[in-house]
Image (tube, rainbow, N blue to C red):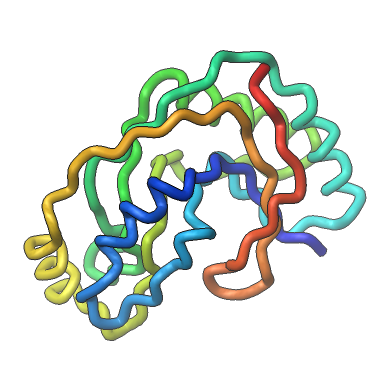
Length: 179
């Protein structure tokens, strides 16, 4: 069964700039910069027939202009039990529209609705138990100042992931250009 998700690939120059934030947090399992992406829709483990339906449904994505992605800071998922460090992505209307379309298309292919609210981000690290709330707060207070980073995207990528925690390395299975 493939484990799939749709996302926006991060250009190498942006990935290189994000590496500056990948140090100094005990319990962090740093994501390889080549695996950085903005997840639009996690699809999960599906059978081959459904995967084929997803590929076909995504090919019906409507044409749109390239969009600009802006990274504007660092954040943590998990609150009292931090589980991930991320670079936040500004949720502009064009990005939100693209994500909503991804949701509609994969649901049309028979995938269950996503229950989590879409929070655009790039995961920089998955956090183990040693990454206490105090250590995570200390990291954020001492991290280098986050200068906004901007890049253009003109396609959605369908990625596959290993069946493991964190999933990488990710493989680009298909690309869907905007135009």
